Length: 569
Image (cartoon, rainbow, N blue to C red):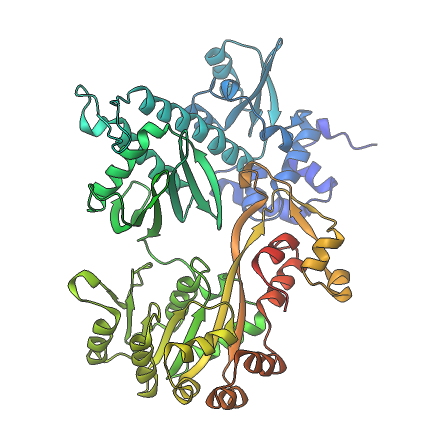
């Protein structure tokens, strides 16, 4: 007798399709009451099936169409907003499209007749059901209802915005006298900009004047994306409000200014570093968002290859020496160092940090934030640290000869020192220390490890697809015949989960230069970075480019990211 899925139970269909074994279905049946979930959701929670496999089984059993991922990128906002956001979230539904027969709605649970009946009453239309995965629905709801919220709130702010005529030099704003200050349009708009940035896990907010409007962009996963364009008439008000909040001079519009704002939102506490600079069109604001919550990273989650992890883990447990992490701004240097401190933190070790600013809070670590306006500079703070009986010292950044000199002295007196330096790769970091003014023999005798790092974007797992690179891309990425043969070239096509970027999250690539006797000898003799690089490569150092290619081969990142983030030597 042939198998008919229409008359079969869900577990039987999943077994028949070979998505899961019979033993695992039996295990899930036992556990589903404890979880308070249906069988399919229990199997997903246990990691035995994927959402796509569950949808395939439901389609076979109930004959509902599965929502096409491509359609989710182009929904009509006016159709989506027919179902209020709270209702959509609670009942796990979203309106897809409307035609003469009624409205097509995606359901996570199409068998929930109570939701179906209430939705018919709510919309007053015939409902046609399609099925959707819960994660896909959640990301789709966030994408479209965020757009609805943002659009309506920006429109509301603009509608209530009163401004006066201005001359060429002054761009004043006048808030309506009937409005409460807390409800002032500019206040609403700035609040919206910051809250949505926090929700999007943005690291930076850019508010910049254009000819006809203000452009607001967020940096997410290392790339900028435009989120809104309020009218240019609101720009001066936004800048003034940011200045007031960060205690800067409102009247000064010709010179750059820096400040900071501490915010406590319902989502989390955030420290905002503010930079304002004049441009030909007006002042531009860049706000860096620093999470003041607990530090959640561990070394094993940063992206180290196994061999590099073993080297790094061994050296951070040494009793003395300097470990330098180098790279540009936003390359994850502080994250790596704080993860290292978290790894070696114990009751017997006194760890002290001097940072500007304190980006992450670590329980059990003494953290000092410099304040140059009152004279608490890196060098001042570090001199006092020596009297705090430290075992391990983290210096936020080596910026000058004085700070570098103190770091060297710490290491030579039996302390383990972690620090960062702006340099392009590991060998040039060594010569940069010498350029700052430190004598080569001091650099050679104190350095234990130099690690250069970058962050590359990871391909979105929901829209990952095979990719055939062009000859130009292969050439630009410097791939060998062996690399091409071993690689699984992938690309994200863009979906609701990754905001149509094709990427979701980032991972680190690392270049570890261990200062062994041969490299130490080259440093003593004042050898240049090319000699240091050659010796390090002969000792087995993997370059940043090599590390990126390994990630690309495994389908973690794309060939385009390799070209964008690394240089072929």
